[in-house]
Image (cartoon, rainbow, N blue to C red; front, side):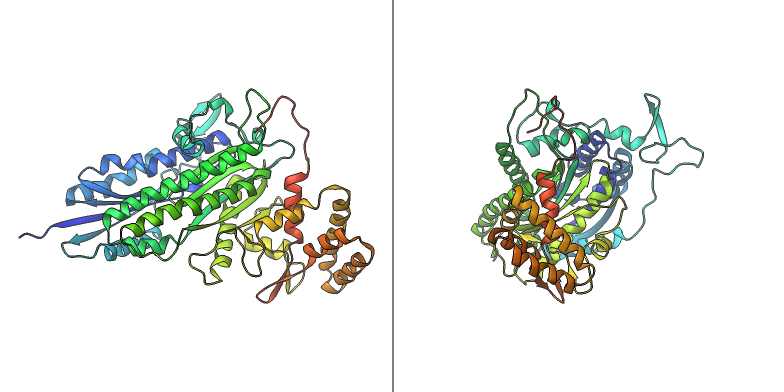
Length: 495
């Protein structure tokens, strides 16, 4: 009997976020995210003939080909199509040979190793041009066309051909007329000019893949179920946020714009005051929906110890004019930082949590520099108090507790405490001794409620060799949720 040889093809889409957030034009971001959705799903269809799709989500493609010719065609032509359809995005590819008797999970691991190696190889850009060429004012890339006398590059031109109906349907759960969508960032804000970029990523995925990796059919089904669970979680979180708001106009503006919603990844732009509530609800729904998915895997004999997947998230609070590209990078770094803290407890999967930062400076810096310059008042002390957990964890605040403390900062009593907290934070820069004197004075002259709130903000928790305080986060979140920084437009409303 002849041995049958198959070819496992893998592709990883790179540069997605850079491509999406090239400009602050919301219509271009929407088109870019829809174009990326197409690249990661339908774009590969013509190359999948003669093969069996295993994974197609979140920028990852795995396809098992029966013949070498079909696999070679995918390797040769798919990157060209992607970079033509979406200039700025690149593809890493790898192939492993599978003979009869080979362990499928081992071959998947080998494929992943080869893909990681390919990512380190630079890919020639298709967006470069000669020095004397006219360039887009927004992206700096060579222009190919004028729109209303404004030079536009090819990538922007292609983005504007996609309106994002498929991605919107995945997020909203039903068709919503495009007049409800904001088409520039100014329409998404109301009382203040703050926006939020949210990036959420699942935990525990690797353990499940290692358990079911030998079962090709189950791996394919799991990929589809995970995509569906993430989609349903976003829909549930959005619906709950809508229920909290009033439709007070015939044509309200929806202050949510999905950017990525695939696999266990979710990126979203929304009105700043809705961000924490939406993120918590998304994570809670993600845990619930993935619990159903894992229960189904167990019913098929897979021994999976965890009850559900969890998720960590980063929220970057930025002004309308702040570059979205850097806002997303900050949200991603905050998510990574939250994951590190969540995994430090040794619990599998890592518990769900979120971390946020309000950008106060116009300078673009990485998160480590922000921590050093803004969140470290003196050696051994820090205002980097997060992440905040969805469920109770030892020596950590939950999101619920944070919101409860922040809500107490409202009103006349809260204003007095805010002033004391700001003075205490300023004195911390001169040394903890002066700040301690301020704390003793506040404790002496304040009423019981004010003293309790001040103590909550200025009492430290150990973070390794550093004492961390929640004061900075409390004041930042309070300003996002409560303060008005611009006049209301009586002709514009949002849900």
